[in-house]
Length: 106
Image (tube, rainbow, N blue to C red):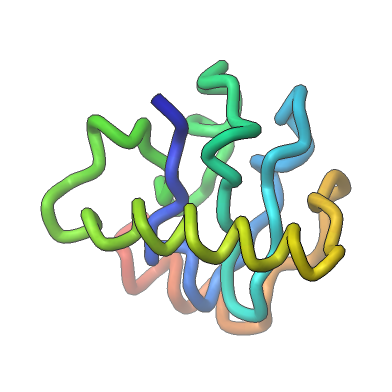
């Protein structure tokens, strides 16, 4: 059961999660991160690191974010097939991240 980055990450792209990931399964899109479902080992290390609580085990994804399961899988495969490697180092979040964090109530 892989973990999923929900659209709570859109406009944030905090990378605290990638630093603790032991298998480098996070990939980067323009406005958010995603997790490659076949690379995730379900260690849960990333879950508590996300400042906006955007990461869930796929079985625990709330109903409003169910579509993000497919988005993670599809986009992760596209990005990897295009030759982009996983993100493994912390980067600055997007300029909109703090406002989005407040909007989400964190």
